[in-house]
Image 1 (cartoon, rainbow, N blue to C red):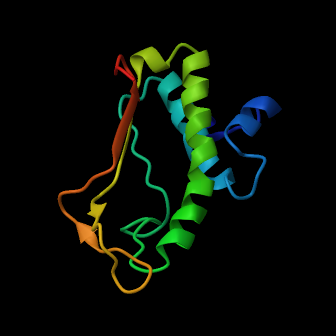
Image 2 (image 1 turned 180 degrees about the vertical axis):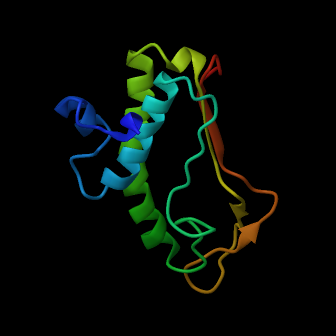
Length: 132
């Protein structure tokens, strides 16, 4: 339980993860928890952004508005996690993997959405010796 108590984190670290901003706070807390779990030796950590089985990114309509809002929620906390792991010497031994459940079709679905595409994934990795 102490891994999820952020009272002992300084203001600069909380700001790094976006915990000071209501838009980035929920995901920032998840990313900060990840760092704390890594420090405690947890070997595998999985985080999903958004509620429900499909998370927040399953936009068949309103794609631009949906993805713009989602990106605002996750970009700063993700950068905070990578920065914090690196400055603590943990990024060299930690692989960070971000992936989607599926990709999106190149064409539109309706006027402002895209359907699922089984051959298109967005994946990136950092740390753990992965070449940038």
